[in-house]
Image (spheres, each protein chain N blue to C red):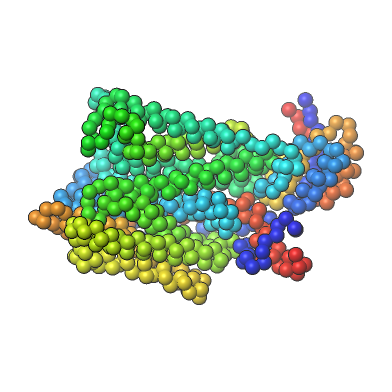
Length: 463
Length: 175
């Protein structure tokens, strides 16, 4: 027992008196059991939304981008807002699995699998928006630097939009590989338990014949560590590059050097909020309260509180710098954000992102599950408004007052956004029924140090 | 060649480590150990060589970096230099800051994917590969030590019985 010592002050991360076998049983249960009624209800709603979104995408592609609410002044609106929103949400997964691995935070193990799943599914949603905004998505391969029939016409490596192509595709594929490598031992566990032949076949296929040899584990741990080391700068670079899409332009309100850290903090903020939204529901539905404990939720709330405060600092810094710069266009852009026609969006953003996370200073509130859930939704709404405010309010008052205008979304804009939410939940719900949603092999390694039964035993023995 | 093995099965990682320490002292040759999760300190006990995957990762990163530099140099400087917003498009060094993001992403892309592919190949992991753990419980909560036998079966068995064992199996694997 000596080598499994953990300070008694640390709260248990696995409750309910678990054994190694019990962990396998609990993780396999949602896969081996049948879906309950709530699952089918939520799945059906998501599927309907997804279908509606597909309809709107087909309408967009067959008719043209003109079916959106864009106009000559506001040439970017909900599409890029949604893109940045989804990419931002996608940041928490890698952050939890990579950064918390480098910092040896044991509490990541209960939540990293689902957070990474969320990352991959939300980056898929994000990728849809630039794709359909092309208008002719079948020509999407034009963004890849390949020799072509138009003479020596290459993509422009000076352009942040091209950097984005490389960043997002690297992020998506590397996250996928990181996720799948971690899944191999857990798929193998499901495979070795499976009694139905079809199930056994499928999980044999996806577990790549994982056998759990000592040498395999040694390599597995090394690969996980190196991937975490790679994914950490990667995740920071991705949202930095997304922010460059704006920061390298000359639009007042976009052209600011604070954007990279500000966007990265915002991404972590919204991503953790989405993790909380999903896991608070999932731990209940899949009976995983012993693995995703109140302690996990509290720690995530603290991250939300800190990143929310960083984002708040960034908002205030932007305002200060706009005033301090003495550039009247910059000053107007921010004055217009707070008091112009889109004042309600600005103050929705401020309320949701800056004020609401401050409640998490109170232990009573941050350990309340209902309150955490409500705040997580509020933060997600707030972060959507942040992107909307940055994008639309900066554009709708441009350099030429005669072209000043407003943006109003068409039903297609709304439909595609709702469609991606539906698509995301369809993927996540399917995942929750077919994948081991807890990284059970990892959780087993901390059972003796962080399980409540072992902690109690140590307290009793006095060591 | 028919191989005969003793499979010593344990139900706890600490019991496994103690048993391996004991068996090593008794001079029993351990061929392989199957565990449901990475057991801390097991690779040292088994005297496994450190894996060189991190070194390959570094090399793959160098390849990605070089590839990124050469590709961008060819496309932007050699093949078709253009004046883009007055940027110094005719010299790689002067235009390098704008190329850093893509070169960085390519470095990460090459490192991560090639390292993982190397890992999969070295550990024989791919779709349709048949799992090789002798009993299915080793992915759940059992720890299995595989010991080759050649005539000294009784002796090894008596030694294993001195450890905190759950079960001993003797199996013959035809190859």
